[in-house]
Image (cartoon, rainbow, N blue to C red; front, top):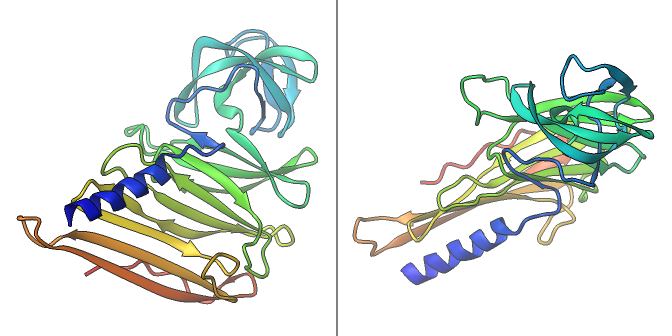
Length: 275
């Protein structure tokens, strides 16, 4: 039995360790030569890596900036200390606080874009971080919300509506568990370009502890394999040994359907209790 459970864990770990294109980790720096986009509006481009540096220009939200150099000078923005970076923007060269540059820019289907950064309002806990989303287009922006990060290593992906009516996109945050027992899983959001509604469907946990314990949860959408039209399927599995002798491993599997109507869930998703 141990070998079966170990195989399940290794399979889950292999999936979790596959680094998606838009992957981010704590303390990550912007890449030299890569183009990013400003998250802040009217972001000040300065002549030196200091808040007192002369102003060269004000950059609107969603302005393309190419990273030329990373300074040793650090500035704390939204509770997170990150270095100043030298950039080229609109033909001008200067310095920006890297904490105000979006980690990535992902396209929506109406020529607008999803921008996001890390924030931390808890000065006592550097690991209590959140992700803040903005909708950007045509030099305008709108706040979409700030949500807790379940793991500081994560990736963000934008999909089509995956078969859900009344919305245009499903946004998925994949948490990248890097060690045994570390919390992984998925956070899901929906977005309508027509109404501008950006809503959370919740966080769904995945964690594995070698051959001792595992839990895997996810949502299945109408256009996914095994999906049902007009429904979101919540699927979960938890397993652990029943005794100290590791002689019997119990796995509990649960599935529940939630009706989807007029761009939203008819009833909120209630997390499984495995017992």
